[in-house]
Image 1 (tube, rainbow, N blue to C red):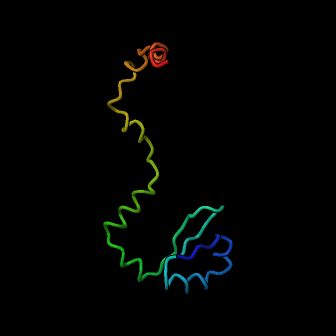
Image 2: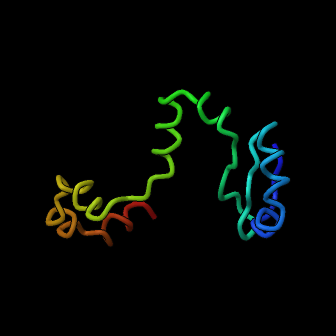
Image 3: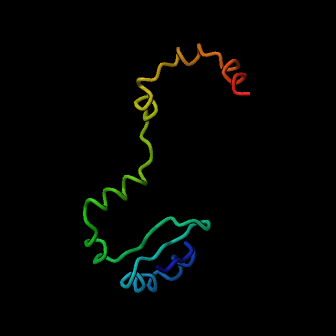
Length: 91
């Protein structure tokens, strides 16, 4: 799989399209992989389940996700714990 920088991608878009016809092209930004350029033929060949899985791994948390994630969390009981005593037992 080919890898190019974002600057090279901008300057060589025609070459990238040709490369993407053969295989996916990774475009890096600040040295980290950020984008995949693939041809339409490759894109339509990806099963929907795989696309959904890949999309879910990159999804940013939605506003209020912490409230939902910790809805059953009992903060009062945590604050009542004697943490110093707990750590003294470990030492």
